Image (cartoon, rainbow, N blue to C red; front, top):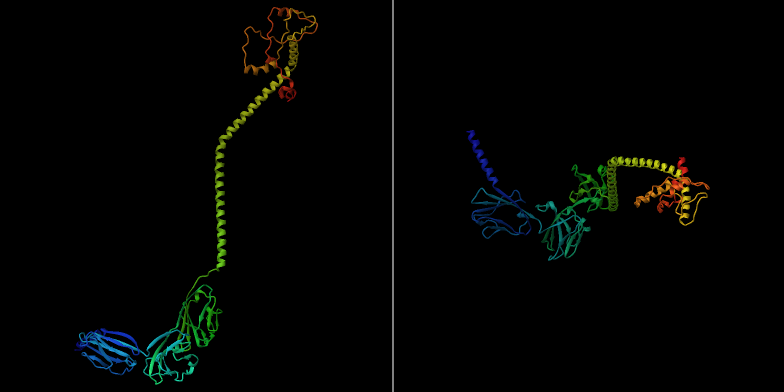
Length: 517
């Protein structure tokens, strides 16, 4: 029995969960006096309920059922549009749409009505303006803070009285003119709704103010300076620093005073000048978020230090280094070219030396043979010359005698008779014997080799040289023997041309020096 109860309870629970899972929820936001439309597939089969959020204990209200409207706040537009006109704060809540064809399908629409006609977004420190066009004065201005905008009851602050006099702390920041109202130096605590009432106290305009904090994303060079604008007076804000390396927030400025002790990573680099917080010599470890908040804790500004670039040299230093680098490069190119030339010269000299070494072996042997041959030939010529010098010395006296004989022969040819006393002559044709010295024969050899002449067949061989006869003595047998013989043929002119001593070679003119060696 217990088992059956458990099974039935499980089935019911699953059914309930399945039904809950089919509920669709949608959220919408509307301003005062706007129109809100609900789309229904069929007016006859759709039921619309409303559960207000301003009164949680209130019961659900039926707006439409069975195709009939059940509330004066709604009207049916066409076949499938259920419209709520001029919504107000009391219209905030949940609208439940049930489909008759599919009971399991339910749609929930959550409507939030803003307590304003217009919504404006302003950043802290800027000015908020409300137009008074088509509104008769004098007017009054009421403010409801942001968390209490949609509350049923809450504190209402009177900012401007009908006498055009700002109240309280707004006296220094509110400017009232006939055409507009201006609130200067907006802070996050000014966020909320502002209602404009005419002279009779009727609501003419309601504006919602949304204060959005400043968002600044910064990238700085290495050792740069980070300047954080506090927007408000430094005595009315505090600064929270959250580095990226640990994501732990720490207060570095509170009501215009630097925190003590200061974070070690920021020590000596953080300073305050008026409404500007300055961080000098920024490093890569300083990346993080600097949050500026007012004394109530509302955000005023967020500065995100995303990246710190690497160290960069000044442009002038970069230019100088570039020029020096170019100069070094040119010098390096020159050095490389010189080294290449030296290497080429060394290779060329090595190749020439190798060729000289290979060629010197054969040429050296040939040179030595030439020198040996020249030396041998010089020795032979020296020996021959010595022999010639000796022969010249021996025949010098004979040459002198030959010159005397030549003079006698010339006198005989010219018709002058010369005879030694006591030596008779057979006829005028008798001539003294000719004398030929070995020197004449030596000098005539080159001429004979150059132009040889054929000797006559009957030419007599030259007789050996004889001593000159003494005066007064006659050689009768010789004269008789020569009488019957043919007269001797005169020697050629080339053989009789004797060279004087100054025309002889140097070796022939100084036989004594040669012989003395």
